[in-house]
Length: 198
Image (tube, rainbow, N blue to C red; front, side):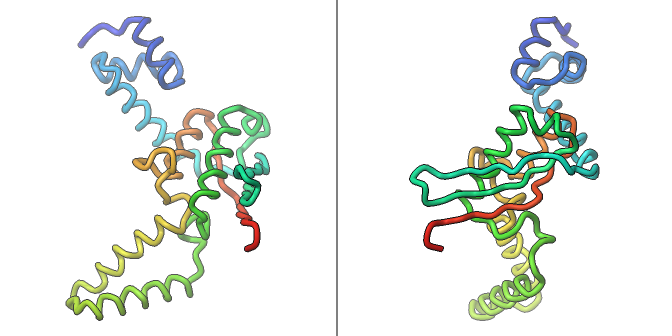
């Protein structure tokens, strides 16, 4: 195992914003490999964020985003556990990123549980008809419908959409990263997207 130096800890801190002890542990676990240490910290942060996601978030802010040209706007309620976190730069940056995501992708709902059953039934019916028209075997029909539904969720559910600034992550991943950094649960409570003339 390579020796972890203070310089290595400092470099990892600058790249990740994680605490000194967390950086030291990550470097020790990854035998001094900075890239592996970054991945280790991200994984730990995601695990901790998932645990924090059950805590109540009643503070936060209403964030407004107006797209250049003044023809498209978003109002977003983003909640945190404390007012202190809601005033941090990281929280405000997250609010802006989520609002811009909504402006760019026009999601229908926050998560899949928010979709009305009749919308899901309509989608399933469309996918079944498409599969029948393509003469797909009945035994794989349910798998085809499930696969198309997953793509549908990624289009219409904000948390499941690929994050516009990094398509390898979802919006939920982006939120979880901020939860891991700030140490509090953060929840998208509601949003409205306005386009001139609609």
